[in-house]
Length: 82
Picture 1 (cartoon, rainbow, N blue to C red):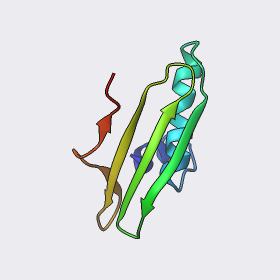
Picture 2 (picture 1 turned 120 degrees about the vertical axis):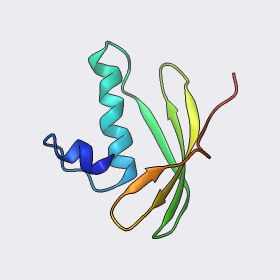
Picture 3 (picture 1 turned 60 degrees about the vertical axis):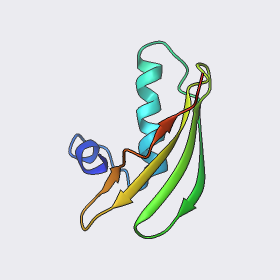
Picture 4 (picture 1 turned 180 degrees about the vertical axis):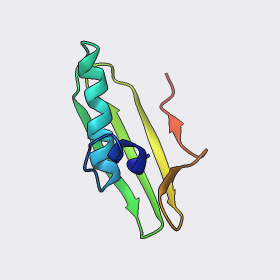
């Protein structure tokens, strides 16, 4: 996803930067872009983030794995229960 966003003129290097950038999509639709990203664990090949979007309260755990070329959000990622 980072590579795809960067092909469109962004210069993102971390998952946190990617989430901040995508939160701007909320702002573009008139919603708050306030987002909180907490790194729960991180290694060279795996990361788990907890993300909360401010105004909506939407949240979830984002589990990512890095292969040889890019980070991939895995199917272990989950939205918060409502």
